[in-house]
Length: 157
Image 1 (cartoon, one colour):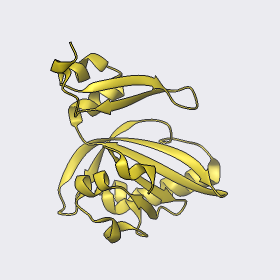
Image 2 (image 1 turned 180 degrees about the vertical axis):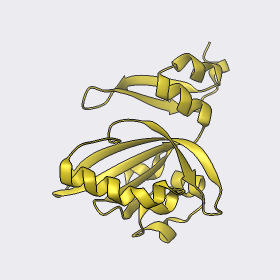
Image 3 (image 1 turned 90 degrees about the vertical axis):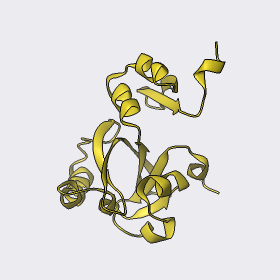
Protein backbone atom coordinates (compact mmCIF):
# COMPACT_ATOMS: atom_id res chain seq x y z
CA UNK A 1 0.00 0.00 0.00
CA UNK A 2 1.31 3.44 -0.95
CA UNK A 3 1.38 5.97 1.93
CA UNK A 4 -0.83 8.34 -0.09
CA UNK A 5 -3.71 5.84 0.21
CA UNK A 6 -4.23 6.84 3.85
CA UNK A 7 -3.89 10.61 3.32
CA UNK A 8 -6.85 12.81 4.18
CA UNK A 9 -6.06 15.26 1.36
CA UNK A 10 -6.01 14.50 -2.35
CA UNK A 11 -2.60 13.42 -3.65
CA UNK A 12 -1.75 12.89 -7.31
CA UNK A 13 1.65 11.76 -8.58
CA UNK A 14 2.59 12.30 -12.22
CA UNK A 15 5.60 11.36 -14.31
CA UNK A 16 7.73 13.79 -16.35
CA UNK A 17 5.25 13.58 -19.24
CA UNK A 18 2.33 14.59 -17.03
CA UNK A 19 0.77 11.11 -16.86
CA UNK A 20 -0.99 10.22 -13.62
CA UNK A 21 0.66 7.36 -11.71
CA UNK A 22 -0.95 7.69 -8.27
CA UNK A 23 -4.48 8.93 -7.54
CA UNK A 24 -5.38 8.39 -3.91
CA UNK A 25 -8.91 7.82 -2.49
CA UNK A 26 -9.16 11.47 -1.38
CA UNK A 27 -8.43 12.52 -5.00
CA UNK A 28 -11.18 10.16 -6.16
CA UNK A 29 -13.64 11.88 -3.81
CA UNK A 30 -12.44 15.38 -4.70
CA UNK A 31 -12.44 15.05 -8.49
CA UNK A 32 -15.14 12.37 -8.91
CA UNK A 33 -13.01 9.92 -10.90
CA UNK A 34 -12.10 6.36 -9.95
CA UNK A 35 -8.36 5.70 -9.90
CA UNK A 36 -8.68 3.29 -12.84
CA UNK A 37 -10.18 6.08 -14.98
CA UNK A 38 -7.19 8.42 -14.58
CA UNK A 39 -4.06 6.24 -14.30
CA UNK A 40 -1.94 6.82 -17.41
CA UNK A 41 -3.90 9.87 -18.51
CA UNK A 42 -2.58 13.42 -18.53
CA UNK A 43 -3.11 15.34 -15.27
CA UNK A 44 -4.45 18.26 -17.30
CA UNK A 45 -7.79 16.42 -17.34
CA UNK A 46 -8.23 17.73 -13.77
CA UNK A 47 -7.83 21.37 -14.89
CA UNK A 48 -10.22 23.73 -16.64
CA UNK A 49 -9.16 25.76 -19.67
CA UNK A 50 -6.88 27.61 -20.17
CA UNK A 51 -4.68 25.75 -17.64
CA UNK A 52 -5.44 22.39 -19.24
CA UNK A 53 -4.02 23.60 -22.56
CA UNK A 54 -0.96 25.26 -20.98
CA UNK A 55 0.10 22.61 -18.46
CA UNK A 56 2.30 20.45 -20.70
CA UNK A 57 4.16 23.53 -21.93
CA UNK A 58 4.85 24.59 -18.33
CA UNK A 59 6.09 21.10 -17.50
CA UNK A 60 8.32 20.93 -20.58
CA UNK A 61 9.77 24.38 -19.88
CA UNK A 62 10.61 23.35 -16.33
CA UNK A 63 12.26 20.13 -17.47
CA UNK A 64 14.25 21.97 -20.17
CA UNK A 65 15.23 25.08 -18.18
CA UNK A 66 14.96 23.99 -14.55
CA UNK A 67 13.24 27.24 -13.60
CA UNK A 68 10.62 26.28 -10.98
CA UNK A 69 7.55 28.51 -11.06
CA UNK A 70 5.13 26.29 -9.17
CA UNK A 71 7.22 23.57 -7.53
CA UNK A 72 7.63 24.20 -3.83
CA UNK A 73 5.13 27.06 -3.91
CA UNK A 74 1.49 26.69 -2.92
CA UNK A 75 -1.06 28.52 -5.00
CA UNK A 76 -4.78 28.95 -5.49
CA UNK A 77 -6.08 27.20 -8.61
CA UNK A 78 -9.31 25.83 -10.00
CA UNK A 79 -9.93 22.12 -10.32
CA UNK A 80 -12.26 20.36 -12.73
CA UNK A 81 -14.51 17.58 -11.49
CA UNK A 82 -15.58 14.66 -13.64
CA UNK A 83 -19.03 16.23 -14.03
CA UNK A 84 -17.49 19.45 -15.42
CA UNK A 85 -17.89 21.48 -12.24
CA UNK A 86 -15.01 23.88 -11.54
CA UNK A 87 -14.05 24.48 -7.93
CA UNK A 88 -11.35 26.40 -6.00
CA UNK A 89 -8.54 24.58 -4.29
CA UNK A 90 -5.05 25.07 -2.96
CA UNK A 91 -2.31 23.23 -4.87
CA UNK A 92 1.18 22.43 -3.63
CA UNK A 93 3.63 20.65 -5.95
CA UNK A 94 6.77 18.76 -4.99
CA UNK A 95 9.38 16.95 -7.06
CA UNK A 96 11.12 13.65 -6.37
CA UNK A 97 13.39 11.13 -8.07
CA UNK A 98 12.26 7.51 -8.09
CA UNK A 99 14.78 5.09 -9.54
CA UNK A 100 16.31 7.97 -11.50
CA UNK A 101 12.95 9.12 -12.93
CA UNK A 102 11.44 12.51 -12.13
CA UNK A 103 8.02 12.43 -10.51
CA UNK A 104 5.85 15.30 -9.34
CA UNK A 105 3.50 15.14 -6.39
CA UNK A 106 0.48 17.40 -6.17
CA UNK A 107 -1.25 17.90 -2.82
CA UNK A 108 -4.72 19.46 -3.03
CA UNK A 109 -6.67 21.11 -0.23
CA UNK A 110 -10.30 21.57 -1.21
CA UNK A 111 -11.58 23.98 1.44
CA UNK A 112 -11.24 27.54 0.13
CA UNK A 113 -11.05 29.03 3.63
CA UNK A 114 -8.23 26.67 4.58
CA UNK A 115 -6.46 27.36 1.30
CA UNK A 116 -6.65 31.13 1.77
CA UNK A 117 -5.30 30.90 5.30
CA UNK A 118 -2.41 28.67 4.22
CA UNK A 119 -1.51 31.00 1.37
CA UNK A 120 -1.09 34.02 3.61
CA UNK A 121 0.05 32.06 6.70
CA UNK A 122 -2.91 33.01 8.89
CA UNK A 123 -3.13 30.01 11.20
CA UNK A 124 -5.63 31.82 13.44
CA UNK A 125 -8.13 31.70 10.56
CA UNK A 126 -7.87 27.92 10.54
CA UNK A 127 -8.42 27.65 14.27
CA UNK A 128 -11.50 29.87 14.09
CA UNK A 129 -12.81 27.76 11.21
CA UNK A 130 -12.52 24.64 13.39
CA UNK A 131 -9.38 23.18 11.83
CA UNK A 132 -6.24 21.94 13.54
CA UNK A 133 -3.11 23.34 11.91
CA UNK A 134 0.35 21.99 12.67
CA UNK A 135 3.20 24.16 11.44
CA UNK A 136 6.70 22.90 10.74
CA UNK A 137 9.31 22.79 8.01
CA UNK A 138 9.77 20.47 5.08
CA UNK A 139 13.05 18.77 4.16
CA UNK A 140 14.30 21.88 2.36
CA UNK A 141 13.64 24.08 5.40
CA UNK A 142 10.57 25.81 3.92
CA UNK A 143 7.54 26.52 6.09
CA UNK A 144 5.04 23.66 5.85
CA UNK A 145 1.63 22.89 7.33
CA UNK A 146 -0.37 19.81 8.13
CA UNK A 147 -4.08 20.46 8.42
CA UNK A 148 -6.66 18.19 10.07
CA UNK A 149 -10.27 19.28 9.66
CA UNK A 150 -11.55 16.19 11.49
CA UNK A 151 -10.24 17.36 14.87
CA UNK A 152 -12.89 18.94 17.08
CA UNK A 153 -11.04 21.89 18.59
CA UNK A 154 -13.74 22.41 21.21
CA UNK A 155 -12.44 19.25 22.90
CA UNK A 156 -8.86 20.57 23.12
CA UNK A 157 -9.31 23.25 25.79
